Amino acid sequence: KIEDHNTQTTCWDHPKMTELFHSLADLNSVRFSAYRTAMKVRRLQKALCLDLLDLSMAQSIFERHELTNGKLLDIPQVIGCLSSMYQCLARRHKELVDILLCVDLCLNWLLNVYDIGRSGMIQALSMKIGLLSLSKGHLEEKYQYLIRQVAAPEESCDHRQLGTLLHSIIQIPRQLGEVAAFGGGNIEPSVRSCFQHVCAASCSQNTHTNEPDSALLHVNRETSTHSTGLCIMGFIPAHMPTLTGTVSGYSIHM
Image (tube, rainbow, N blue to C red):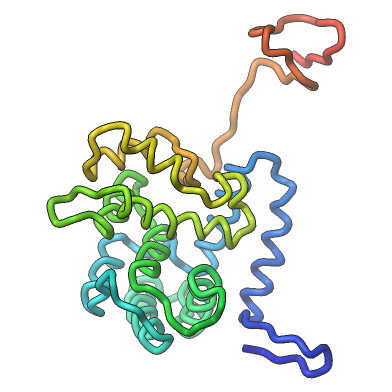
């Protein structure tokens, strides 16, 4: 918490976090929301060194700190968990991880996402979902870990449990200013879409793999390019499925 007595304002962000979010504004020129959001999340992930965090390591730390879903964590408890996590990462990536800075920044981010009113408390489930969402791992494996956080012991989940998961995840693009592109925070369409089928953990995973409205990030697509046969400038009427050559009223670049 930083108080500026000259302007009579209070800033809750670490200076490095403020710098990071100013840099994210550079990405607002990216036109398509899915790409723009993915690029912002990726930059955030790297700044917090969560791209180094294995899913299995995260889960073991959650278990060590007994982060049960109904538990409310105060700031010292959150710091304790984050300190354990970054100490493990520093042993593997000493040259990349500044433990004290990473703990401060990650705590700052978690509070911005899950404790907007600064009550000083975060739900353990929310913290787990936030950290797992930004950890590294194959997307399908990440879905499995995320769904297990809310699923019943028999690996099934109901509307409420799946809604809880999606609500926690959608707070990440919300904090990045991108929630409007993903239903404005309304997770009900995604929940209903999933429950059109018999829902077990595998069902929810399959539904997400089929590109739901919720934000996704495929790191292996970070450097992908899209090859196209032509680039069309302007609007295309719906009744014209294909365009070749030159059409009056349109500029077509072969």
